[in-house]
Length: 357
Image (cartoon, rainbow, N blue to C red; front, top):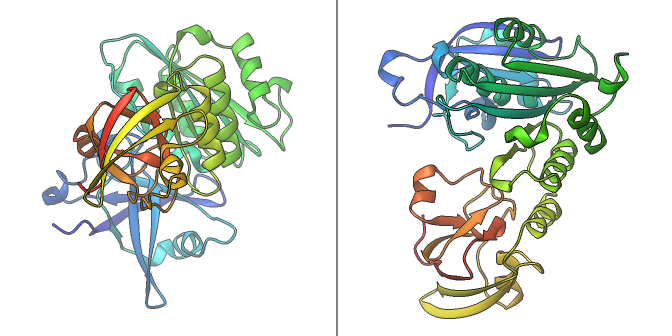
């Protein structure tokens, strides 16, 4: 079946003056293909001026809400976001891909746990999907949301979050930060490491935190992810999603260097029909750079975990990943990894670059 299908627009609304929420109907015959996990996204295929454009948008609806809902915020130089915002009344359908993405957390319906979310701007879109679903399915959950915007008026889903807080007062604790609106000094300004430490001192028990999720402005994501890692949250429990994937290698290197307990890995590998071996000094470089520095022309493109150019199959041992926006669960279970964002788990590993996806 074609990945892209025409879905009818059933309604739309304007959460803020510069954003539009679009609700899409999935016909009965396609529902099995459009099942999604909270936090995933879809891709729109837009034909404009005889050219096809592809844009990813996170789902802001929960899985049990029936329709698929996306939020589009007008970007300064966003041709497609402006087109959709300005001409939504003239559109009856959109061409939509099946849901995908790995910005998800495992469900724990029978456990008591604490989740902490950090969001800015439209970064709330995948997070509100996760929050709504988790509140409905986990009676023992405590959710802390720290959400930064310029003002209440420009806060996407403000009313919906307040309604959820009224419905689940013992489970949801939302805190809104503003940069251009006067409020309590604790919540005045941007979400930063300094603010995080103040929140820990005054609002939540950090030792009880099970999962952290971060989405929004790139600099906020980088600062909060590194701060939570320094404050003792294991990297496997820190989840983040960038809407823009550029200039991230330094960030990944910092994460990698902070949680590498294995400093040296013996790597056997098959590449272009030849078996070779290198020693990966994990504190000095990424695994991809370790290969490149020794003259092995391993294919790569993004160096940020958002393409599959450097993917390889693990034959023996294991590798983790600090980021993955492209490999599916089945591919990971089949032992494929992206070596540009690989982290050491085993002191000896065997890889095969000739077994491609």
